[in-house]
Amino acid sequence: MDYARYQRKKTIRKIWVVAGLGFAAYWAAVSCKVDFSALRRGLPKGIEFLGFMFPPDLAALAELVNPALETVLLAFLATVFGAILSFFFALAAASNVSPPWLRNASRFLLATERSLPEIILLLLLISALGLGPFPGVIAMSIGCIGMLGRLFGDAIEEINPATLESIQSVGANRWQVIRYGVVPQVLPSLIINTIFRFEVNIRLSVLLGAVGAGGIGYELFYAFRLLEYQRATSAILVILALVFLSEKLSGLLRKKVAPEIKLR
Amino acid sequence: MIEARNITKSTKEGVPILKGISFKVEKGEFVGILGPSGAGKTLTMRCLNGLTQPTTGEVVFTDHRNHAINLTRSQGKELRRARQQIGVIFQGFNLVKRLSAIDNVLIGQLGNINWLRSLFYGFTDREALLALETLEKVKVAHLAHRTVGSLSGGEMQRVAIARAMYQQPAIMLADEPIANLDPSNARKIMQLLKPLAEEMPIIGVFHQPEIITEFCTRIIAIKDGRVVRDGGNGLTRAEMLDIYGAEWSEMEAHRPRETPPTENPLHQAPSAPGRGLRPLPA
Image (cartoon, rainbow over all chains, first blue to last red; front, top):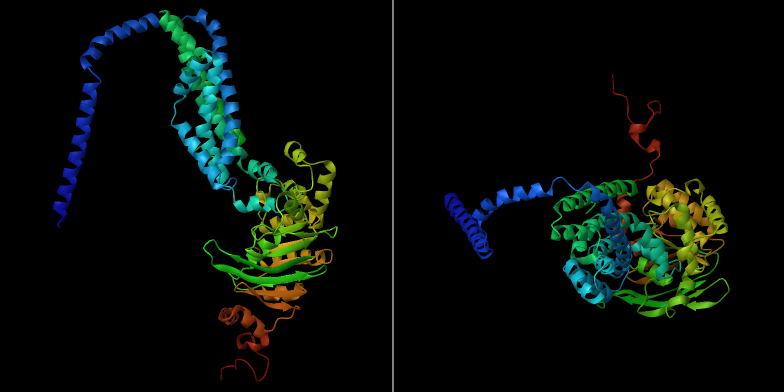
């Protein structure tokens, strides 16, 4: 086969792929009722709406401090609970600490949890526990386990099994091996990933708040429903400040705790 | 005192690695084990510490109070109590790299102290002082608060020895303790171990025949999963050939020979008459 033919064949294949993707996108757009003329007609309306939103209701800012704090506390509590739970799941999920059946069972649970969005968890919990921050904390704590448990577990599996064996060889029991062999070796990675998860949880806590867990997210949602658009703008500003601050804080803490470790 | 009684060990697939190893080591002995790689030396050591369970046969260990413990049959608490009295030094040091040297030494007593206290509180001042004294004995007390990961190989091995000493064991096992060290550090480590052998029996795996014959009181050779030699510390060339086979003659052929300068004509002082390079005729 000469080179020109080979190249022609490759080009034809590319055309097929692009055409296929284009058709799929067109079909998806039609079934989702995408209408660009609606966008054109809606644009002036949107600009007019933005006018309603400004200026932000600065008087409401004082009222929004408490809900904002609630959101932060929610995220904090969920991160602490979640990190502790994750550590035990991670121990069970590490091949150098746990027997294979337990490792596989724990890894399966972690993977299942990862594929389950927190919002579904929250809706399930709300139907059981009613509205409020408590189901929010539980939903977010469980939400941590999938990600943190996996990351912690991987960090534990990186420990040289010979090190753990040498602690065993002095007559230490399983918990002592974990306390003196596992914990010191993975602590920096544990702290860093937990801090990162706190940052994620702040954003998540805003979202879950809107669904019914309270806090600043709920305020935003409620302001929109009552058509208090200027108050909503204040809430958005508070949320932006929260997210920005939590990102800065977590970056700072990460650099302080373990400058040598990069986040995965 | 520790005794291996006809221990055998096979892999999961049923391939025999140890084919019946027996020996008995008493107080005052410094036993060197040698043999080609893959002969089963490390596996034998693991069986002696109960880290690996032999397929058949048993290991009996006599502790400080003259209790005989069958390591092969004991489990859980009994096994941990026995291990507490068996100090082990590994080739790769196997210390906890993110902990300080003194913390690594303190780990040596984990089997002896209340485990709840060790989980939630840690160690007492008295224990720390004792650990520091042990580090002093191996001459690394000045590194007590350095993270082990930042130490050199020789220093790490000293910390590892301090940890094993701090266990106050009834016997010391050393699996290739000097294999990762340069010759000068290796000799220093051996000089540390030698006087210890008077307090407790030491069993070590070594690859250097000259070190074994210099420091050990007894030499056991393992080849192909069996003890092929067990006796005093003299090693003849024929014995080495027997243990290592053709590998040994190869090794010997490539060993740098100590050649006195007078035998090398190039190093010959020109004034010496009758030998070496003759001055070119005028």
